[in-house]
Each structure stands twice: as structure tokens, then as C-alpha cells.
Image (cartoon, rainbow, N blue to C red; front, side):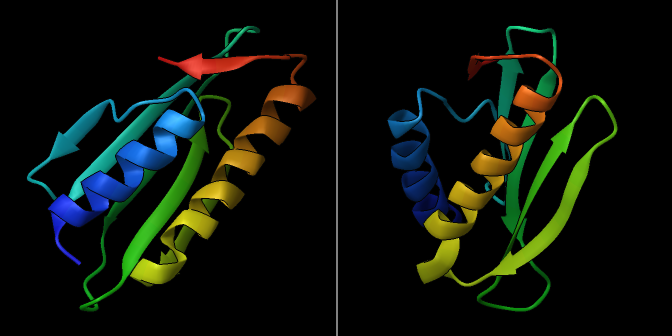
Length: 103
């Protein structure tokens, strides 16, 4: 899957959640920056894996939380993005936040 296809999938997915791609590096690394109403900052990132046909998805928090990297094939990308988004929402609730938005 090319960077353009990832960008297309991410753009549609992000729009459904009120987010946007905040940064792209060399059409291989894609970042979605997220903030919450309690001062938390989060990031969901997607990048090409060294293994052809695979991508990695990661969710991180400024509070030193991470769900690590998850390898994914193109058909599973949106499902893994949903899991990362769910994880970010869980972290937001744990720290007293109630709403997230694009940074």
C-alpha cells in the first residue's frame, strides 16, 4: 500500500472522529495529534513497516503511556486505528478528561 493510499484511509477515518492528519514525513510516516480538555496530549501514528505490505500503528500520551506498535496489513488498518482511538479515549477518562479534539 502506498503512502497516498494510507493518507486516503487516514483522512477519511480522522474526519469521522473530528481529527486530522497533523504531520506527514516523506509520505511514509503519518501523525494525528490529539488534545483533551484536561491538558493531555496524545498521538496516533502510522508508518510503513520494514516488512513489505505491513504498517505499524502506535498510540502515545504525554503522560508516558503507550500501547506500543501494532503491525497491520492494509485491510485491517481502520480496525487497528479504532483500537488506538479507543485506547486514547480510555486514557482521557482516566485522567479526568471528557472531550478530545484535534491539536
